[in-house]
Image (tube, rainbow, N blue to C red; front, top):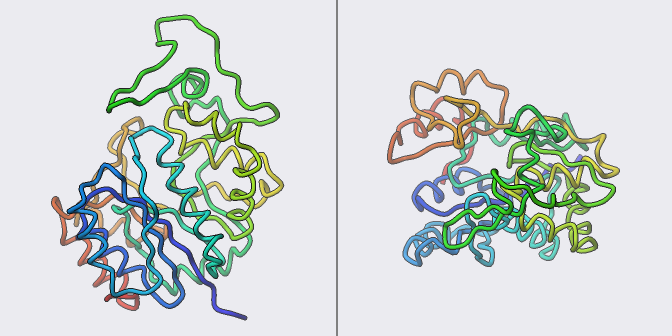
Length: 292
């Protein structure tokens, strides 16, 4: 049996040292890494990222575009990475979407073993909408028009007004969940073909609130691949408040919980707050992994 291969799509916008560390940790002869850096990121920071990994083959920087929080730019970054995987004819069995503030908590061998045991399955946190998991069941995210202009979030109609509700694309049931995923080659190819054949579906999500938490779930769970989807994003995440907009920063005190977790990756880390936690992960969990 041939060795399994992984394509990583990384979405980053700050902390070049941390991104470089992640890329070097993931890098191996069985991995291809594609990096999208937010166009709002300064040229200086972007050049630090590129320079930090320029000696590594099979690391590609994608064409940059703006990624506003809650906007379609994050979906577009994933789609750009997916299309680049197809166009470059990259050899892979699975693709992961990660951010620059993620980090593995399993070795490459453990990740490959997990994927081998679940070959053909794909992983993303998901639930049908409307859902009690989200305010108003998530309806306002898709029934109202959401615009992000110069860092402003404009909603039409606003929460106090009555207006015509947007109709979800016909014949699709909406699903939501987290933004992060691990998809099989079959699912990646299906998504790439789907978005090229269904531009109206894609355009609908230009005006959805936080569409990266709805877009991929809806495509795959309304597809012939729905039976392959496992409701798990494979991430260890610590939430102070389940309704918080962002997870807690992981620190040394979280090491034991990460070590005992079955998840493959953890988020999120901030080397300005606690850089030592990454050293300890390397030393205690990833001793047999890559380090360049």
